[in-house]
Length: 340
Image (cartoon, rainbow, N blue to C red; front, side):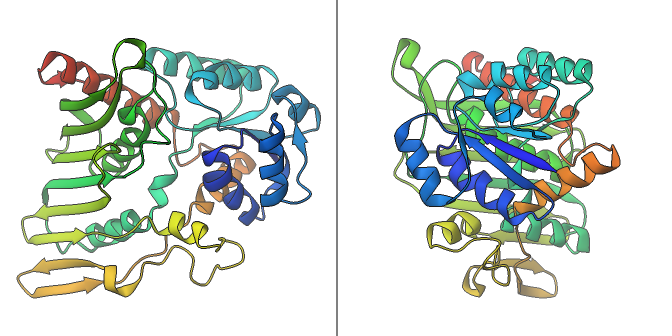
């Protein structure tokens, strides 16, 4: 199948291009890159891949699907236009600024009879897939609660504005991860850290308490404004606990010059010294890293389209994530626990 990427900022360059190229099921038709500097960056990263001036020009070249990875403020119109033109769509996260807009996009996909999905690639993070294997083993017994953190020392990539902020950015990832592990969220307690004023006010940190319908309670925190880097996954069950502080493995590998296609033997595997620890009545053991690979998102999308089935990231799940973020913002503004 033929696919194109719309936008070539950090997301297009680091989180989409290498994985589309690694998925042999897809032919990359081109990238929408309008400025001279962006076209130069594309030529350096992917020699020979054509640059297009617009979404319509890319679709006219003949694609089955497009990936919309432009800034959030431009994403809605592009998703609607791509569906109107009759192609399948991958929308980057945040899927939408609010649940109302998410429902609008879902309705448009149904009306067009085309697949729309959301790039929740961090379902294939190394630490998450390793944790999933631990939970599947049953060694923790019934899970009571979880403590996650995704802290990044990088204010430079945080857009400012009423529809931006860290809650909608990294918050979309961690909420999706936790609902994949423990099921839908019913209620939210939230706190947001703010900088700026007026239309430039933006949240640069958050703490969420998520009450899952399954009975599990999960707490998750994140910041880009506190000069702090940390990834933490702690899960506590009746029979023990599992604690992980793995790195952002795939991003670090890309920045070191590795790619999922050229370095498949080591791709997405954490160094042994950073393996998580499972502690039960039998003692503490290090848990070998599972392989994380965002390429699986694109392989899964191809399988779903070829079979006429639903991709791994469903629209119902994407809408639920946005609704949880809406509830979190409301909770932070009112100081009250908010139902999803």
